[in-house]
Amino acid sequence: MATVRRRRVFYIPGYDPIHPRRYRELYRKQGATQAALSDYAIALTPRAGARYGWSVEARVEGHDVSATVEVLVWSDIVKDSMGAGVVATYAQLVRTAWTYIASGALARLLWLRKGPVIAALYPVGMLLGQLLLCLGAAWVLGALAAWVLGRAGAPGWAAVPAMLAVSAGVFAQGLRTFRRHDRRLFAYYLMHDYAFAARWNGANPPALETRMAAFGDAIARALTEEVDEVLVVGHSSGAHLAVSVLADLIREGRVPQTGPALSFLSLGQVIPMMSFLPGAHRLRADLNLLGGTDRLFWLDVTAPGDGCAFALCDPVAVTGVAPPARTGPLVLSAAFSRTLRAETWAALRWRFFRLHFQYLCAFDNLACDPAAYDYFRVTAGPLSLRERFAGRRASKSRIDRSASRYTSMAA
Image 1 (cartoon, rainbow, N blue to C red):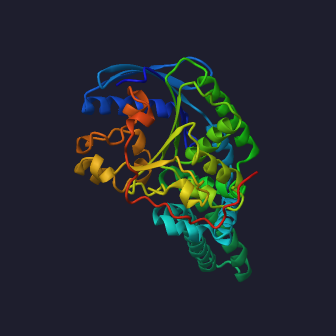
Image 2 (image 1 turned 135 degrees about the vertical axis):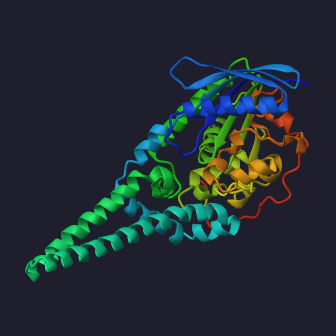
């Protein structure tokens, strides 16, 4: 039975400097593809106003549903954090590696999933490789310059400064070239991402806390509107932001008893990368609250095929802050190898960044399980998140053992 005719959706992106129109276009294209595959109708119209979003009119499972989707933007904060030059980025590399290694967080994260830890080590290896390659090129070309000068009859004393000048120029230009073409390698991008988490040792910087308070205000206003469900979607790093925003709303009594259903969908989450750090007291307290509240329904969807996420890791349990009476999250697998056709899975399997966004895209083999996760039924269908997944059992292969060395929570 349809219980949702009007829905407000708030989408919190991950660590992404891209303009939020990207998410509207992704929703438009992938929604049309999924609708054609699954035999329902979905249409988008842009929304005017200061906040970025779009409106959705859909006919799903025989019912008409209207939804308003709003992107809660923090890409400007991301851009500011990515402004470091070459030298500053290498300094970030050292600080970030030291934070995760010295705290013991890296070893504990390896207990859970090797994929996201390897993804975290990728920029370290890539940047060090670039450094060694540039040093090698500088040495070879510097020596060549000294040899050319010697063959031209230049005095021996002139060879050393010439060699140093050429070597320094080649070294600096090589590093700048790698930095300029990082859109293909993602080494600097990922380094800035992990450095952003490590810089405050698992806490949020003041600018981000201010923005999160604004996110909470927007969601609180929606909870007073005449809608049937308010759905908060946190993707990747946006999942841990959503945890804290929602925990604040509940803690402050801003979730009305008789208002719309409040739902939380975390996708491709990397919460342990933050919650395992010594200074993540606030996040651990928020996980503890959300793991035992009845004020919302929390569904966590990941997939083992997503090497950038902590797949099937219960973020509350693995952090070691599970309350005695658990209410969530319900941990489910998007099962890319089953919900995508064999040829689609083969084409995407090694495109790691594309797979990390698959949760927001169409699945072309949902016939394997009619009750499988479908982003567009969730955001534009006639059932609330709780009703759609009522009776579902958590994935058998979920990881729910405590693995974090640090479990202290903010007061």
